[in-house]
Image 1 (cartoon, one colour):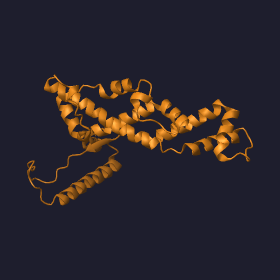
Image 2: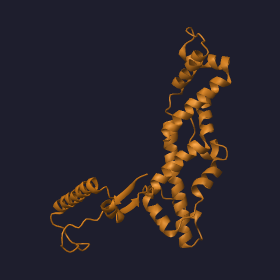
Image 3: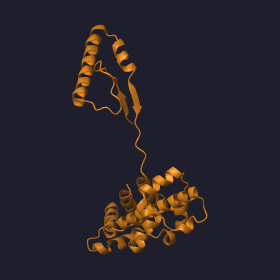
Length: 246
């Protein structure tokens, strides 16, 4: 966490410029302010060395402006990225890992290929209320994903139409990013991770396997060490997916 501290310095007796005034020699005035501050600090340091009194330091700091800076509010697009990653890591991770192990790739069809996927998506992503201002901002930010199925809001008043349209537009954007994340996850070299897993376990147990080809090694290790091999493989895949979702 950081704090921003400001000190007001009097430069000269000129009047304070109006908000729309052009300031001549602004760079020079900035440098002049720095020099005045340096001079004040030097004087304070000299006087403190001589008197050991904090009066002048207290006077300088008493009227400092202090602001605790916050991160800017995320854009709606940034929020969709966060939510898509959250779906992967918090809701569907185990199923994604199992699909990678069993099928060699994960599905992006949350409706049909994930337990309760449609309900999870709607409850966590789509089923949100937006004020009129929020809906307008969201639709402006995410215009490329705008929902066009008017049947979703037929018969509603215009404020409710905006809210529903924004909710489904947000869902469309999250799904687009979710789909891209799954594409990236499917690029994980599962066979290489299987080999790494097998080598870790054989090294741990000092199990000799020079005669077994790499492409068959994991199966032999899994038969010999069962759950230990499976759990380590899953752990490695989870770590790979978390890296993608950082």
